[in-house]
Image 1 (cartoon, one colour):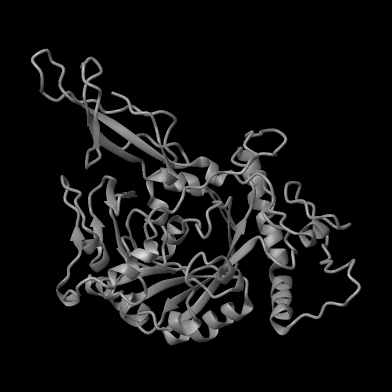
Image 2 (spheres, rainbow, N blue to C red):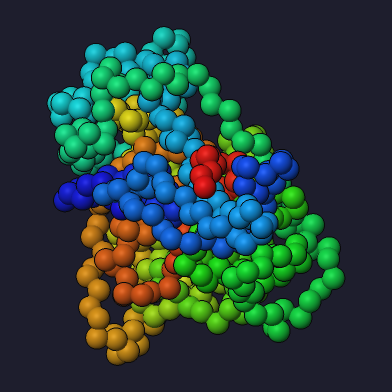
Length: 471
């Protein structure tokens, strides 16, 4: 389970355990150690038994590799089936200290007021901006709106986070930094993006056009993993088995969770997603919002609000579909989602939730009252109401109303835009067995359809550690 604690304010999540509970185990053939030849190996294309899980869903320490002799030499020295297990790199969640990135943040932290989440003590924190400057700062309207919004939700963020963090400290999931040092305070070397997926999507547009209406979902067979680049660019790929698989794209290896589907394309090539004949009961959207920081860094291409508005969400949404949209801390984007985007999709806003980012010791990753970066992000939840009446006629299952003002507290991944999983916190608010879709995804989830021009990014094998194989 990725949910470590569930309290009235919300949920404390373990993102790392959610990834690893998928249990990425593959099998390969290997020559026996007694052979005179140097052992050789190749990736076997299916997986077998799923191993025991810890209470939080993380794989139990150690594993029992599956070793099956294969008939071979007369002396009994045939090939063996070796289990290769992959786990997500834990150092990518090793956030032990707040991200103090500017003098302004330090100034906030060194002010006379201070909030202490561990003890639960709370004091007012004054935002001291430009205290040593001679000129007077003038806020624009967007900044004034942001300050007003922050003031309204500040107590909710502080009080709710404090309760969840204290529970995490009691259980040992979180720990004071002085009591448990990882000794990894240096910079972490991140995997290189050897295969630029967004460039691949652009390149795919130059390939011979196919009849999109005739394309069906490509279901990966149990014993063959040959997938061409043309397949990936033109149709939904589905791993319908109960086991993870590995595919190769342009020489790079990616792990696929069991019962997962994806379409690798950009916003101009979404027709295969519509052709798969499914509508979805929950749609999670993480749009690449326009902002100056992303433009400067050139990390990914942004979309304008009008481009986001043109996405075919109404065609993909089932009756009474729950739509969840991640929104940056710009009030312009928040107002756009609530007042323009959702109404254009016949979606009624039902709740606002907040993702609060903390360190392993329970501190905010940024000072709560930082004038530049906040330690939280907003999610806007809504229901498709145009089809709601039809939904209630077609099912006897009562779905509880979505509660407002809930918190999702977790230690964030250091990889940019690797959002925490929402599957377990949303399951109570969709019908059993509902179809799930994530738009602008960068990773895959069991039981979900995922779409985006970087949909396999965090499935790259370099983000995982291959544990030593056993016979």
